[in-house]
Length: 166
Image 1 (spheres, rainbow, N blue to C red):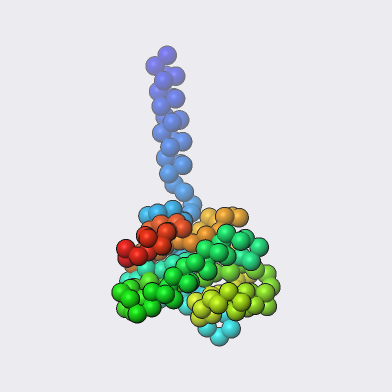
Image 2: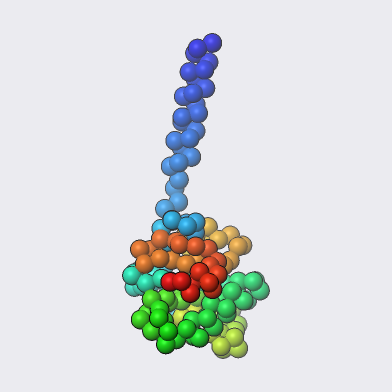
């Protein structure tokens, strides 16, 4: 009987150890390291690493996902109204919008019609989009992550009150 309990204990240890050894280096949960992102679109480019030391609103959106598009619009508008106040004036919070629409023309039209800051919005597709979705465990769930100055995820879909305290 002792051998059976011993084998069960060994199997439990092996299961817990193997589940802790995840192959995913990055994630979207608070405390996880934000995956490196380098975005290029129409001659403009940005890397997440370029914004170390600042808070970054990393907004993943698509025109067919009304909630993610609205969220991107809300954060973008909030940042515009904050201009001249603490935070925006010293560059404490920046935005990186990552759009997954397959049509670049549709993306450009939405950025213009929604009055988004074109400098902060990027359209990705193909392997780049697949890698970002995988690194951030997005699947079909799009939204916004607040990345801290240390490059770690602070919060998913932060409220404007959360942002106002930064």
